[in-house]
Image (cartoon, rainbow over all chains, first blue to last red; front, side, top):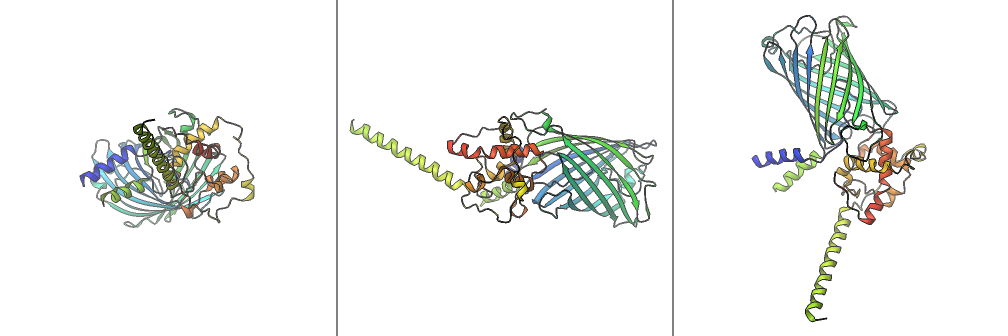
Length: 289
Length: 149
């Protein structure tokens, strides 16, 4: 078993590089799925600075994204949260699946998104902000005991227009643990690579390695009260940098647009892609025979 | 020539023939010679007729090569021979396709056969890939070593 663990670690270290071309978005999804057999390991964080004297928080999460087929990508999230002057807690996990109903590229490419969330109310990664604004003044010792089983769906529409990506996500979320109705949200994103032609040299700071964009996301209330009242909205410039062939960094400062929104959310992400992960694991077991 | 020298020379040629035939068999086995085109994977006429905007830009080939090594080798192999799981890009049935057809196939992928879409790459980079694909038969025939990244 130790040998297998070592091998997996080794494979992860020396895995053939892959150009992930990571989108800079943290909230919005575009229509590009993970390539089949590839595993992307991503660590991200959301640091929130609320307005009304509420304590700031830091919510890191790990994301494992795997491409099952060219039209199906699955992701597992494990998340935590640390609150200023308070404790650090594990806040739960999420399992999401994205399906691409249309095979080829179209002017507008729809993606269907389904997610199950097994969280507690201390969760602050704010992967999206549907529904109404939530209070951040409950200590972790209390909020961690309030469980929330949620189902979330998204309709993702995404287009590539002259190297610009334009993506729109429409979100509906149902908390199965509490009667909050169905909550709605949205996010829009626009991005473009800074360089559109690849240089022959392997370079780190070439323009082709950077993608800049911006996101707008927020809540639209719920079936108990649809609209902008008591909701949060953010505008977030975003930048991704392909550090080398298999890893990328992303950064996005989100600015709260309403009084209920946090003043600022600072997001940071690092991702590492293992190309041909499925084959590497398969060869491991073939070798064991 | 002494008897010993003649035997040594014969042994040398035996070893040489063995090595060459092993390499040739290896190349043949490494290639996906059984590759059959998917008849349902046909670009529209307008796409087939598109010309490569980088056709006269010889410098762009280097970038295409870099992209190929990053994006395509896992399935198509470093020499583009398909590695038994994807199209052998050196074969005539691939090379005889127009630049526009190859561009369309890179852009859209073929979901039924596990070929992902590379629309995430900027348009010019996809054309760079097409440019490099045209170099593959040349590389294969001269057996030029593929430079490591």
